[in-house]
Image 1 (cartoon, rainbow, N blue to C red):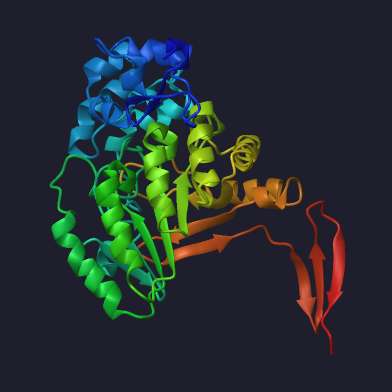
Image 2 (cartoon, rainbow, N blue to C red; image 1 turned 45 degrees about the horizontal axis):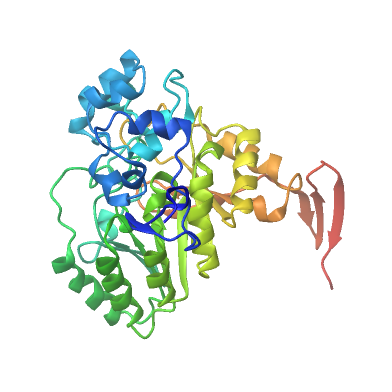
Length: 396
């Protein structure tokens, strides 16, 4: 086999033309892989290698970026809150010199995380109180959130579930799944199951298939989704074996967490192409983050890049008031202004819904600019995106 045509399939050599990318690392990737002794491009394309070699310590991180005092303080103190975990691939996207790099801000702990405000809480979405059995959240009448593990490839520093992910006791495991299956079976109103975690794609194919197969076998379950950030932080995990397995249980939808245009790399595009070509519809869920994506121009660019890789913008979330999140959270008016600058100014498919997860367990509450100037007696005066007014009259 010609070495220039060598490509990777699940960490093993495969023939060119098997729909896997050529193993040719970018300069940024080469810079990071050189810190790992004896690592090869084949290792880089092996998602399990990426997981085993996640950046977890200040000593390793200091080789990759020039750390600021705030970052040093955050890394030193994060063990008591949410540990640090950055796959080498995602670390390669960080600017080593710029502490305001949007990838770096999301990945590297800062001392601000150790400060809390009165409005912040450990479980801002009220998931624990809406959990009828371990690992299952039932807030809405016809759908449930099925938390299947407590591990992610990369621990986002604003994580809503920082109370449970990280290096704590692994209480979600196959032995706990049966109670969740039984609960879903016994509630025939449940038609929609969102499989999340942690991140379910950190599980192996066989384990993930077992979960999907059990959920899909429940007659009244019509809709199954996977909530994940892996295609962004560890796109090597999206293999032909994975997508072929998912195809067996079609339709499977995937909700992917994208936050910044810099995350939409060629490697991520390849992963999303594999998913889309396999008939797996994808939607994006974005968290509004101060200094990262709180400008309309940045958010518009992200939405356009997502459409180009066949990912439909779905939600923009107001950042949840998780403990130590004040430096990430923006005023609500920022999110409304972003929607105002998108609606009518770009493709409708590129306009997501801006929502706040009602603190304490209220569920998603949509917010939008006010386009109603006045209404009464069956007459509605409305303004459009350009500020022009129009009147609509109800039929008698």
